[in-house]
Image 1 (tube, rainbow over the protein chains, first blue to last red):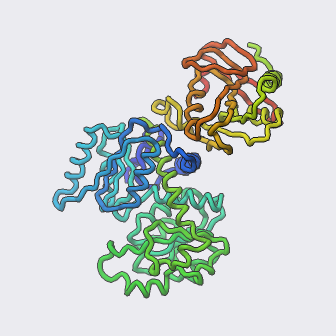
Image 2: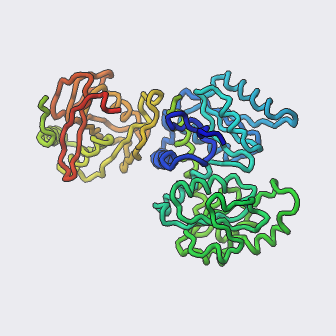
Image 3: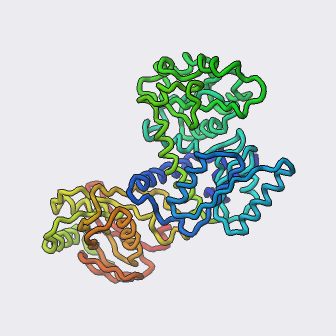
Length: 319
Length: 168
């Protein structure tokens, strides 16, 4: 890592959102507070404000994604920005060069912001380092590295339901190894002052030395869920798995799938979150996903407000 | 310079609104000083309809220059704007740009029957064709000064004048 956080300028002002790692709590809270006002906008009849009128936002999706791309698109449109969606198939050869060529071309079309989704970790960082200083970059997921807007909307949802971060026990459950969401969640939770973050997963789905991120490791749901206020489920990422990390989805469900019985081991008022799309019957039982403690659909709604907040704060922070 | 007493201005503003308005009207305060003032008017004039509040940050015309302020508050309009008689309330009327933003925001909630403007102080310096219907006082102030409403812990309102250069 460089000395200076590449997301902040020399005055500590946010220029890009690439990862939640290393961002001060004040920046995260500013985004959450601003998103609170945007929730008000999304509840009106006219769900559109003129803030980013005349700005061009390019959704650069080098990896297929419908829902994340759609929420970014809705967020940008509600801010009155012009949105251009590009689904770019990555050519097998010389990926690095092709990526920057694409970015150069789009910059020449007077882009103001890039929203980048890429299968390779670090792609959004590379673009952020490369673009003109007046262009802002938002990482919409890079490899198994980071997915900061998902983590921020999760923080927003937690604050809406639990008010304060400082007295919570949070468990992140499932495929931590392949999850960019989990990494971003862990950094955000610890920065915002959550005193106890646990990860619950089989050994084969945990990165080496995950404890270094400041989390407590559990391999057993019964022990791990005790006294938990917030359960953050992760999607089992079959497409990212090479080799035999798991015997079978059925066996995974037996030990780690969130059923009403397992949920009853957590606190009675615990909330259940999932970044979507869900594998019902693999990491989560439908009775829980659609149950009273689930806040999964609020996450989707709040995701738009949080992305509106990130886009407007970045656009307003001119270098 | 000697500033007028905000509490005296408030009383006279409330009287002007009361003697003029026969229709059922609703109040909308603009954050932050305008909301304090609107809360007091709401009580003083015994208005039954709930009070609306606006934070016009998302509608400002200087977003490209100054970005988003650190604390954007949520706009709350707890009544039907369509067909409503609205009195917009702000502490100080100066360039008129805040009021322009507030009117634009209100129209995104619906089409009001009318909007009037009540302001504690009208300091000249308008940059847009906007005028207040109800004013506590008119003051001429130098362009390098900022005039702001303050609210003390006991709810008492006061006016404060300071150099613009200190505002950053």
